[in-house]
Length: 200
DNA sequence: ACGGAGATCTTCT
DNA sequence: GAAGATCTCCGTT
Image (tube, rainbow, N blue to C red; front, side):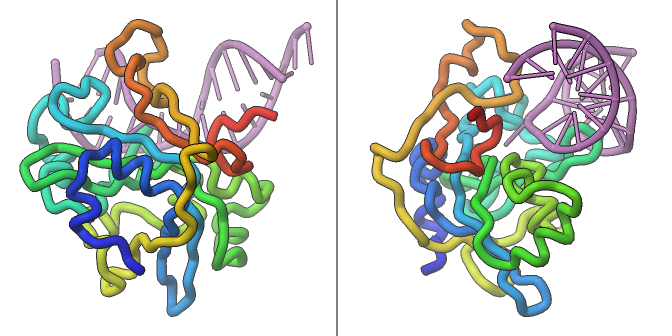
C-alpha cells in the first residue's frame, strides 16, 4: 500500500518515527529500485532553528510550505542531493529527511551508481542513498503518494518501539545546549547495519 | 580507529 | 562573503 497524503499531514515527528520500516521505491525503466527506511529526521515549524523553514518562505524551501506527501529535494555542500518528504498541512513548513535505507530491490542498479564501495556504503547516509537510487532535483516537488511520478513510499515492515532509538539530529552545530541539539528528532532502526554514522 | 581537509556551488546575510 | 540537514580520501596512532 502506498502511503497517502493523510499520513504525511501529521506532525513531522510522528511521520519520521512511523516512516521507519517503510519502503522507498524508484521505478527506473520499468525496474523497481527500493530500500527499507532505517533512519529519519524531522524538521518542523518556523521555531525549529535547524530547519530551512526557520527564516520564512524562500525560493529553495518553498516545497516545505506545500502539499504533504511531496518531495523536497535540495543540494547541499555543492554536490549532494538530499531527499525529504513534506509533512503537516499546507502553509506549515515541515519535512522529514530520509537519512538511510536498507537496499532491497534493484541491487544491480545501486552497485553501478555506487561502484567501488561496499554494500553498506551504498545507502547509509542521506546523500549516499539518493546517489544509489538515482534520485536528484528532477524529483523536487514530485507527488510521492502515487506511482505516476515514479517515486513513492509504501508500507513494508512497521517497527516496534523496542527496535527504535532516537537522538539529536546530525550535521547541525554539534554544540550541546543549542536548542536544536536538545530535540531528539532523529530516529533509527537500532539493529540495522545501514544506519549512517554506524559504529561497530 | 580517529581526525582533518578538500570537493564544489547554491543560498541567504 | 560565509556557511551548509555530506562524503571520501589521506594522514597519523
